Length: 322
Figure 1 (cartoon, rainbow, N blue to C red):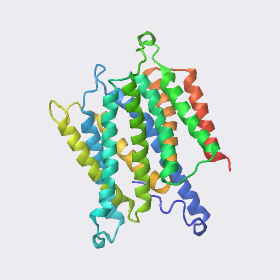
Figure 2: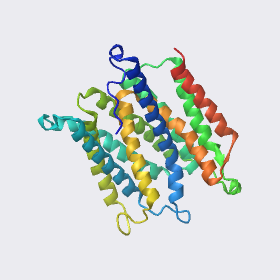
Figure 3: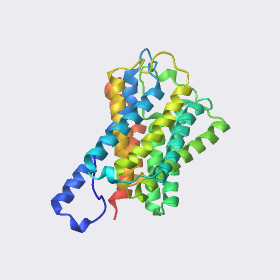
Figure 4: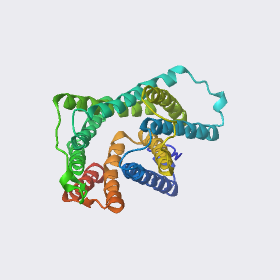
């Protein structure tokens, strides 16, 4: 796991070389997260057999949680010499049950929403998570955003909408586009989905930053509840065959990369903010588009390049102007 000590603190006590090393580490970590986010959907497409995903998605999510837990535990044992002298109370672990429940609820909402709208509408409307996360971040963490930064959030949302609506298309199946539709219950569920997504992210950041315990220990608490929630979800589903049915080398690549990306996100929320996380997710759309173009010969459209421009302008507005 990548650990960056005291990010954003004690600036005057660091030497220029140490500060430069920290910035390089941070940049590499963020770029790695962008690549992992962007490659997730193409990797799933590679795993398809005759157009069908052959493995259990709940099994993959459960394995990701288990791997994150194992890595966090190993890092904690390596880095904390006084680990066995620490007194750990259940009161420290209990707050992490709330985001685990929220994440589990949203995973089920994603499936339930498919009955009330088409996939394209879901992809477009799910970009409202950017607005809900930024709004809850501003309210609950007391981080008041300027008009310029709110406009940057609007540009990120618009970029996501343009990209989802028609950033690229399959030149061999352009005539097979499904009809767009969304019902009122689907719209209401989408609003709930976006609010839960923002709340879970902001609550996790608030908990990580307020507790004065090692990040690896916090991750252990979070992923322990995640394992329990996802195990119950997997056992409650209907699955035929053994746990690893349909798994290939690419599925294990997905498990490993998603586990490391989850650990990176915990570092981002501990030492930076959910806003940084939103920019990572938005920039990952560009990686997703380029990989889809190279691997599946999908044609990039004008809306893809418009999304690129909007994301670049949003980054400049939020971080480039002082």
